[in-house]
Length: 274
Image 1: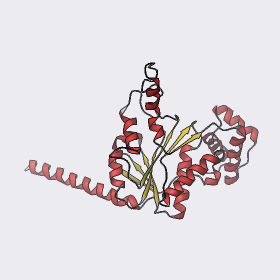
Image 2: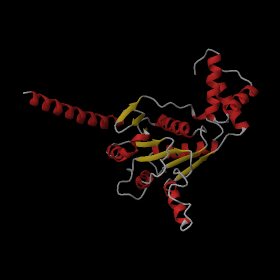
Image 3: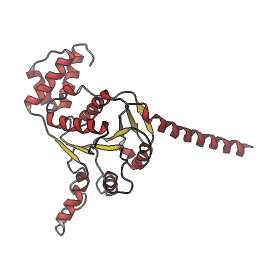
Image 4: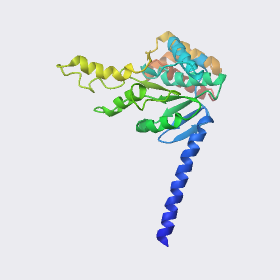
C-alpha cells in the first residue's frame, strides 16, 4: 500500500512539473523581461534609466538602439557583442534599448537574461522561444569562460551561426564582456610558435560570429562630469564638480557606474530616494 502511495506521489510530482513547463511557455507573451536559469521566470519591469540620461557613449548608444529597434520591428538585425571597460554602460544600454523599443509595441520584443550557470541549457531555451510569436533578445551579461574550457565557446559559436541547432530566427543574442575576444588569450594555445595564426583565428572565431561588436572605453573627465550632471539634474540634486571628481578618484575609475554611485551618495545625504 505504501509502495502505491509513493508511486502516486511521484506521478503527481511529474505531472506538476509538466504543467509548470507548459505554463512557462504560455507566459512568454506576457512580461517585458524574463530570467532563464534552466526554467523561465518572468520579470514585471526592466530596470533602466531613460535613454537620454545615458551619456558619454553616444555612438554606442545610437548603434545598439538602432539594432534593437530594427529587431523589434521584425527587420534584419544583428547579434551583438558589447565589450570593454567595466562600468561603462554596456548592460544598462542594452536594457534601456529594449525599454525604448517596447514603448512602440510592448508585445513586439522581450528581454531574456540567461544566468551564467544556465549556458548549458540554451538549447532548451531556444526550443521554447522558437514556437512563440514574439521576438526575444537573449542577454548574457559579463560572459567569460574558465581557463581550459573549449566546449562553451565552441557551443556558443555554433548557436550564433553555422550549427544545426543555431538560435531561432525570432531570437538575437546580446553578450557583454570585458574582453573583445571573450575567451582568455592563452585559452587555445596561441603561444605555440608552430601555428600562431591558427591559434589566434580560433581565439577570435567566437567574437567574429557577432554582426555587431561595439567597444566601450573609460570615460574622459568631461564625459564623467556630463553623466553626473544629467543624473543630478534629473533627480533634483545639487553637487560640485570638484566633489564628483574626488568621488571618482577615491573609486579609482571614471565611468557611468561610478557616476551613478555618486548620485546615490548625494541622494542619501539629501534624504531623497532615486
